[in-house]
Amino acid sequence: MMRGHFKFISRIWDRLHSSFWFLPSVMAIFAMATAIVLILLDTLEASRLGWIDEWTYAFGPESARAILSAIAGSMITVAGVTFSMTMLTLQLASSQFGPRMLRNFMRDRGNQIVLGTFLSTFVYCLLVLASVRGSGNSYFVPLIAVMFGMILAVASLATLIYFIHHIATSIRIETILADLAAEACKTVERVFPEPVHTSAPFPETLMAEALPPDFDDDSRSVVASGSGYIQSIDLDRILQVASDNDLVVRVGGRIGNFVPNTGSLVVASPYGRVSDAVADDLRNAFSFGQERTPEYDIEFSLRRIVEIAQRALSPGVNDPTTALYCLDRLAEVLGLLADRHFPSGRITDQDMKLRVVFEPVSFADLACSAFAAIARYGISDDDLVARLLGGQGGFVAFVHDENTPFQALSQQPGDHPPGGHDGRSLFPFGPQCRGPAARARRRHQPRNGAVLVE
Image (cartoon, rainbow, N blue to C red; front, side, top):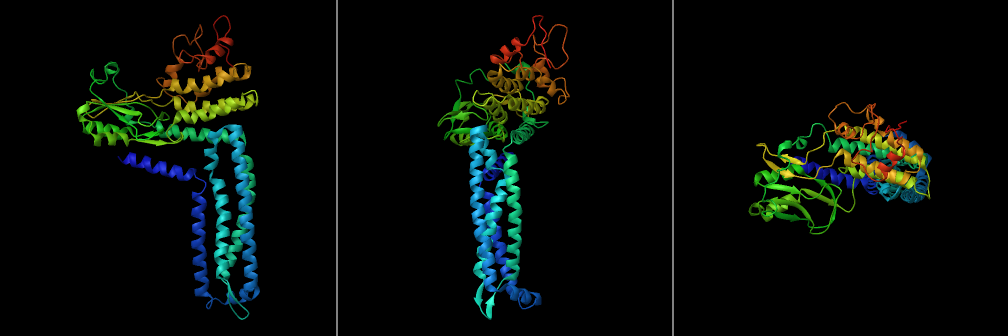
């Protein structure tokens, strides 16, 4: 249950982190509090600090108002320019790299801090400006607050210089792919940590007869209360509900699937033990959203890199070098994924009694779908096909166990050329990968059966 609460908090934080308003709003509130504190400090210490009187004569209320007005006016102008440049970058990223990239630019912490700095300086100067009062010999100038406003103006200027550099580097394809690969690797660490207690292998002898014979006849389907994409599934919670009520639960979808309104989420047996309260508990183990997110969706994390490669290989762009960069980043993520233990799709309780059955994701599904999608568009490019055929070589450094899913995939019957292979040969064009990927392999295979790998 604690893990479920952690996932809920994590989803809320991810939504706040992905919004463009949260961090600037927090910074603006902090600026308001700072202005109030410094004005109060000026009020309390004005009669005790002699140097304040000397600086007050130098500033005066008119000078303080002029300085604060100039800073506030320039900050709101620069904030508008910054927002316009950010929107232009979002439009460029959407058209060039795909609409799925908007999320990364929206959650970019650098852009949020820059906008927050300008807005905070503007709000701060407005509050301090309102506290400057009087003229002639009777006046009050919050000197400390005015000086801090000048410091904020210099800091905002430095932030503007940083923003120009940051916005130029953030739209480079190398930077984008590096960020996507880093986020995908974090997803791998989050979804497939070692060890995972829910990923314990189920006895192979029971796989065929895992579900009770009358499961479909004596079961109740739990449907969704709304529509959306499955963003996370709390298998621990489903296991707990199934164990407490002596149920066998079959999960109907997996993370990333779209579920329509009243679509089936799980099927639980026996029917008589699935009350409305139990159905609600099972339903609450799923979280939905209007879009797929990479937090727990490893397939979507890889898909975003594949989409960039497909766009680069389209006739309108024709940029195979970018596609090669994408293959390198896919090899990095899949290399990390290849050494992980994948769940069997069966979860038992402490008494080794089957409780939960779900559709697991396999290494072959992830690798073949990613590379075959790119091969479909780049089958006519020799460099790209050669990189695809040699893609397995990038995984060797990551794999330390001979029993990993990667080794099982690369040692399928028919994958080895006559006389053996050097461990880098045929991935990802084994029997699991059909269609254009397989045609690419045949296209680059000599008549004697050996495979050419660069």
